[in-house]
Every structure is written in C-alpha cells, then in structure tokens.
Length: 140
Image (spheres, rainbow, N blue to C red):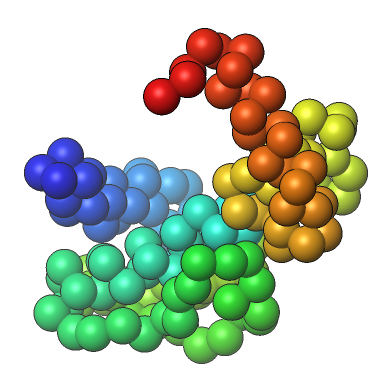
C-alpha cells in the first residue's frame, strides 16, 4: 500500500516540473494547468483522478467509476485535483487502436476488462485464461 501512496504523492510535483520545463509553458500568463488523462478502457483513469482529488484537496469523488469499460462516455468538465498549483484534469473515455493486431491480443485485452465480456464471449475468455495458466504451469 505504501508504494502506491508514494507514487500518488509524486504525480502532481512531477507534472508541475514537466510543464514548467516545457518550452510552451511560458507562452501564456495563465497559472492553472488543465491536463487530459488518456488510456485504454478500464485501467483506472477515473480512479486516479478521484485519488488525486482526495489526496490533495481532501474532497470526495468527482468522476464515476465502475468495474466494466464504458462508464466514462465523453470528456466532461474539468475536475480540480490540486490547489497549489491550480490543476484540473479532464477524464476521457478509454481509447483503443482501431485494429487489434491478433486474436491473442484481443483475448488479453478482454481478460483485462478493456472490452465488454459478451463481445468476445465469456466461455472463450475462460478457455483462453485456462490455456494460459496451464501453459505457464500455474495450477493453483
């Protein structure tokens, strides 16, 4: 648990440093940051935003979360996560490449929860998971 919290505490200072060292930073006088959080579906983008908000502002959830992909359906409003520096995050729907390179990659993405189970088939997913565990001799 401690490494996760330490990592969370390092995000805001790291982002502040990256923005401050960017050549584009000094183009405007605005001292607030607005950052998009982008990633594949169901990896915890909204949870990260809520955790940062809780950690730095001591405020509750602002982004809806769930155990399946598709909870965040559009880029909504800015969510404040820090006072100093004034920082807002934009939660985004998950994005995937237009084509999945192989059937195996598709099955792995399905097992991680990035696509809805019924699109791949629960039985196919279970079969692939058992195949992978057996192949790695993880019988427990």
